Length: 228
Ligand code: SF4
Image 1 (spheres, rainbow, N blue to C red):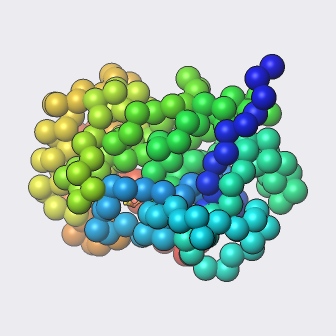
Image 2 (image 1 turned 90 degrees about the vertical axis):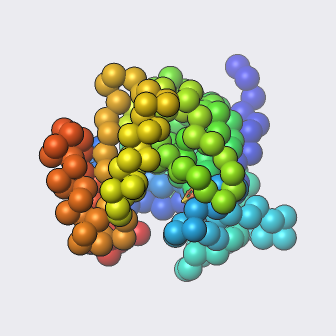
């Protein structure tokens, strides 16, 4: 058996309810990785952008953070698995998010967690080549024309089980249409619109478009419930 050696930079590890997309309402362990060069101006996890050596801490310090900070701890898949038990997590669904988790090779993490009975989901911008197991549920939230200059990759769009697109205005839907033409997804991919920041006009636009196109609506349930 191959030794488990890959180290993952973990910004946060917590259990909650998945508030977005197809798995909305599912109890989930969230594993937030450190690092993202995409640069979305509205990003609500900007503290994960830089992976600075001087912000590296031990696992206990990372776990007991009381606010969003750039501190991260380096852990292997087996160490993470042990932490799930130590923390008393009961969820069997693990959401790997960031930052941009596709910057890392998640194959070993996926294999280890799946062997232990977990189901994996990755939330990615679609701008990095995916290194995930065949059973990992891939949610691409395509980030187009962002300051970092990264392009959404056709191979990510083709691998996506779910394409979840933030919308506020018609131009965002037009941009998604262009992307779907340029990078066609698989025929069974689920397309969901997510109103930006619970704005009423954005929500109405998303509802109208989802009904017209037979797409899904993703409403960021956790923000309505005021949970993490
Ligand atoms: S890809 Fe995600 S983490 Fe990175 S800047 Fe955009 S919203 Fe933030």
